Length: 365
Image 1 (tube, helix red, strand yellow):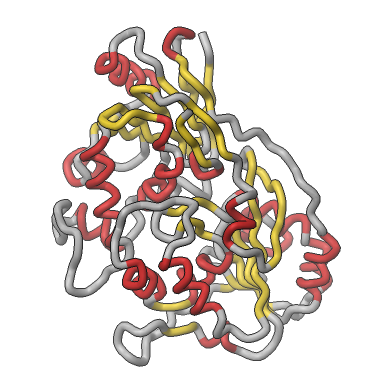
Image 2 (cartoon, one colour):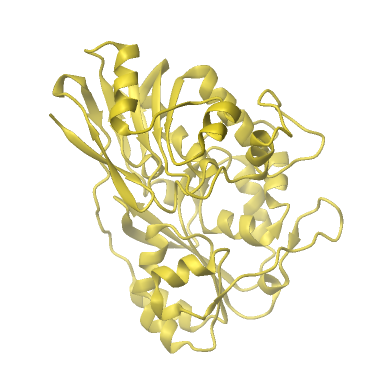
């Protein structure tokens, strides 16, 4: 009887299937490619500010690799949207990582930059790449804008004009944030590409297609059910983050099939739009509002996912949120979740498994 371990927050949850129910597995085992650590260290030493855009495992691993350079550069200013996460993972940086107050737009809904990212002096932005339904890929450039440029997501959504998810496609939304980063003086963007929950390689100022090609394409015959893990801590901390992670893996399941999404969601639903949804200030049927709110496209993603698949959620979200407000079927454990899927598909139904949907592109074949 195959035992499969799916990332769930900072641990893994066990999914057990009978051999006759196991379809294909999208493995993304740890794998390293050459990384010019000396070059990265020189960039750190030559910078006056370092901005860490996320706290994905590969980002934290890169910071550990660069620790000698970070320790040597005592005058280097470090910033992160989640300083405590960075300092907890890299204890040697304790007391050195600061956050920035959100920039205040000077002209209504126009993008507004945090003053520190416009200062003179070499700046380094570091983050991990992941597929994203609006941007195609979220990399260090996208992460920089979402963290330190107010209204950048609204500008990207306006440039995109429609909400259909397009993971791994260079969209107008990505082009817009790339345009926003062109205004940052003397800046370098370092993007880590993960594999198996670890750092695979690091790219400096890489174009979209180069980052895209760092992700594996996995051929998988479609089945009537799929078990998806968002990727664990750094990917499934909120429902918003997990919801954005599934679209690169849905080729592994037939339309109207069953999807089990495994995501801890320890920090709640995440985006402003989803918060409005669960508090009754927005309706699930809404597609557009007169004024954009962060994550509005996620209301569409949730509705589309539910319309096209039978969705089951295994998470730490309160039942009143997951079931009553988001309208999802929930389970208390992996065994119960798999049992429900097989009750729908039949005892001989096949389930494909994608343990880390945020690390690969699944293609049906």
